Image 1 (spheres, protein in one colour):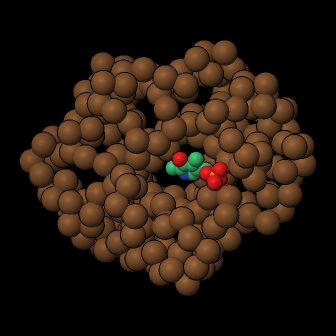
Image 2 (cartoon, rainbow, N blue to C red):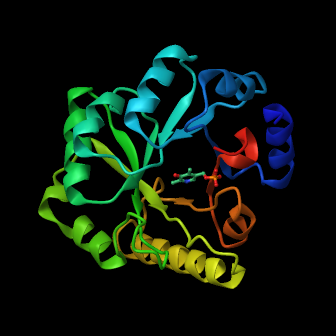
Length: 220
Ligand SMILES: *Cc1c(COP(=O)(O)O)cnc(C)c1O
């Protein structure tokens, strides 16, 4: 696996305005450094306890994205530095993120993870739960989180039509949330959708961020 070659390849296929999050979970810091030396700075991890030691060991200009389910009691480990949390899946979690961000005297950018897959195992809010969260009094009082958009994972399937439909749904949820709650809010603009096997479908359906692991670092 040539990480630099894979990255270069992907970058030639992904429009420059789309953020490529290189998903480095389970891969050692040396693998991340290969990508770093090729000029890449945005990396995604799915566990706080894995992200923290990597952040400590690696260059400080790396942007760390939390993409996996985040337990409330782990937020404190990443709150000082995390660049974007893609996986907000409850009001309770968002409250803790807000509290830890405040302790660190910062605002943490977040995406709401919306459940779009048919599998029940994938985390995420329903569209209705998203609306409830945004309408809640406790959300209105939060000053240390900034909701930048939505994230979703499609069903693990070979059926491209199904994946496309799920991505269309996510795009539509994004648009409805934008119209209802973030009409003139410029920072509400991200749709994180697409992984190694479906990023081209994601981009075609309006993704602004793709999260790609195995196509860069090899299989896990
Ligand atoms: C692991 C993971 C990815 C990357 O998956 P690949 O198929 O290796 O590209 C993307 N998003 C989330 C939420 C993940 O957990």
